[in-house]
Image 1 (cartoon, rainbow, N blue to C red):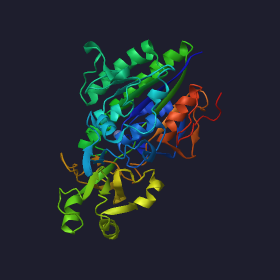
Image 2 (image 1 turned 180 degrees about the horizontal axis):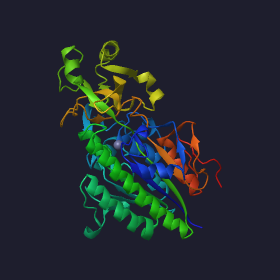
Image 3 (image 1 turned 45 degrees about the horizontal axis):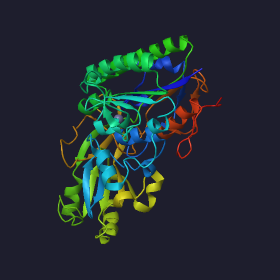
Image 4 (image 1 turned 180 degrees about the vertical axis):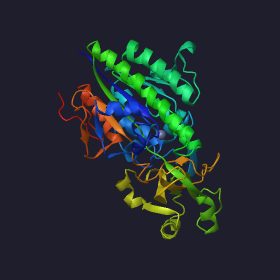
Amino acid sequence: MKSRAILLTLDGLRRDQMTADTTPNLVAFSRRAETFADYRTVFPSCTRVVSASIATGCFPARHELQGNSMALMENGALVPHDAGRPDFLQHKREVTGRSLAVPTLAERLSTRGGAIIFSNVSPGAAYAHDPDGYGHVYHRAGSFGPGRVPVPDGDQLRVEPDLNGDRTMTERFIRDVLFEQRPALGVLWLGDPDATQHNHPLGSDEYLEALRQSDLRAREVIDAVEACRAGGEDILLIIGSDHGHQTVIGVIDIEHELAVAGLKDSEVSRDVVVSSNGTSALIYVHPDHPDRVRALGAYLNRVDWADHVIPAGDLHLVGQAPHQHLAFAVSMRASDEVNAYGVPGTSLVAKPASGKPDRLGCGQHGGLGTCEQSPFLMISGAGFAAGEMRRDCAAVIDIAPTVLAHLGLPAEGMDGVALQRSVT
Ligand SMILES: [Zn+2]
């Protein structure tokens, strides 16, 4: 019997926000799946980074997509980048010789049943699943098949990054991937409830509607998988999220603060480059300025807006490495206090270098705060017990080896481990 795996991601859904009222279909599914009470994400807890970690089974130290925004050393200069751009990983390959530094599931499965990814988040996050064109990636910024050859015009995914777009994309995924193409791996990555949480407070009416809609998308996928199973197929169904959200209670312009403190030549200079990752930041120091590192460390440990200051020598503790002259990672100050709607978890955010800063009172993520580090995971299929709750350590890096185990394929070279109780 041919096995296959389906991964559904509800972007940004916090584990503690799933209740019989807010997400009845997911709660019902939890009785038929195994759930993971301590499921964790990576750092920064950002969609592009998690997408790469789910695709590769590795921490950012290994796959090298360090952040939603990050710097690259180019011709002797530190250049800040938005990793959400459609061409970022293509550009990174030109600069560093590789897009991601380790193989993706799409590559591993290219001759073993293939992978098809549908994603309604940023282009950079969607293409992180398959930057080198081994499978199919469907995204509103352009859909590609093997060799990164664009799919025919009529096959392109033309949806908006909103609840309606998620619904249209889900319909297509179910029809094309679940019932017709039947690849070894199908990935459906919804943009909500993340998109809504960035623009509305957690607990608000808009937020609750986004949970309700995303929960309905989950039911559509669950029902379709059940229909395929009824036809005799062996399908591993993984449903989860990539990170949670915290409520934004303040915006810190770190580059401005560093310039004022005399630790950076100016707000736009390239001696020190700060890449905002929402509720965290990556701070790069050009090797021509080694004296900056000690002074920056002393300063960052003194300010009241940083909870965790991780120097280069300790980056491995959070799954990172000092690639591209990354000198510090900072998780912004977080608390368990409640917002105006009684939802716990607040954070300061780092102002992005370009684009709009985050909205006060709305959601954001990226750091090590309790709620943003608490995504959810439920798995049904061979090796998982219906209705059981696991409390052992499980993380987003375990998804790829779990998929490969279900398909009977080796998962060498991954940081994560397969989660099946017994692999048959
Ligand atoms: Zn996300």
